[in-house]
Length: 223
Ligand SMILES: [Zn+2]
Image 1 (cartoon, protein in one colour):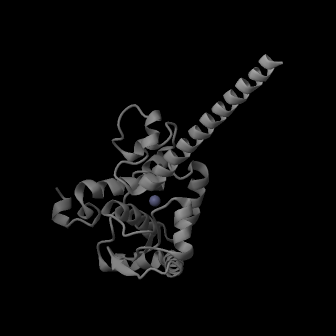
Image 2: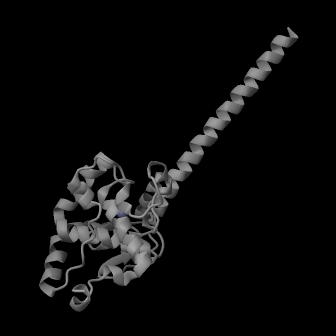
Image 3: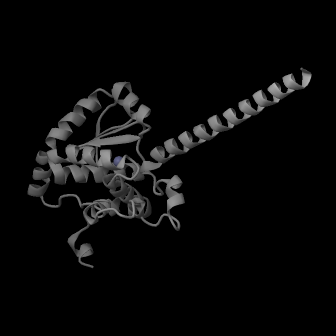
C-alpha cells in the first residue's frame, strides 16, 4: 500500500514536471515568435528563421521557401524608388489616395498628433483603438497609403520599412490591399514577399541611412 502511494506520488511529480517543461517550451516559442514580429523593422530580421538557413542572414530574400515562384521572389526584393518628377508624385498620391484616406481615419483614431515626415503623414505614439490593434498584433507600426501609424517614434529602420510599403502602395494603388491579403493567406507575415522587401529597405536604411531610400540624384544613379 505504501509503495503504491509512493508510485502514485512519483508519477504525479513526473507528470507535473513534464507538463511544466512543455508549458515552458511553448512560452519560449511564443516569445521568440513575438520577438520576430517586433524585429520586423530591424536590420536583421527573423532570427528564428536561422534554422532553415545555411548561413547568416545576408539578404531578406533568402527567407522565402526554396520552391518559391520567380515572380514572388522578385516581389520580395521590390524596393521601388520614390517618384522623382512632380507629375509622377501627384499621380502616386492620387493612385494611393483610397488607402491613404483609410490610413487617415485609423491615424485619427490613434489620438496621436500627425506630422509630415519623408512625404507621408506620420502618427507617432498611437494610442486608443489603433494603438491597441498594433499592440495586440505585436506590430510597431503600419503603413496605409501615405499614412504611417506607429506605437512610438519610429527609428530610421522602422520608418524605412514602412516607406517601402508606401512605395508599394504608390505603384499598386487600390490593388495593394487585395494582393497583400492574398499573399498573407499564402505566406503568413514572416515570409510575406512584401514584408521581406520592406525588411530589405529597413536594413538598407540601417546601413546607408535614410538617403538610401530617397531618390538619388541622376548623376549618382548613372554610376
Ligand atoms: Zn511591414
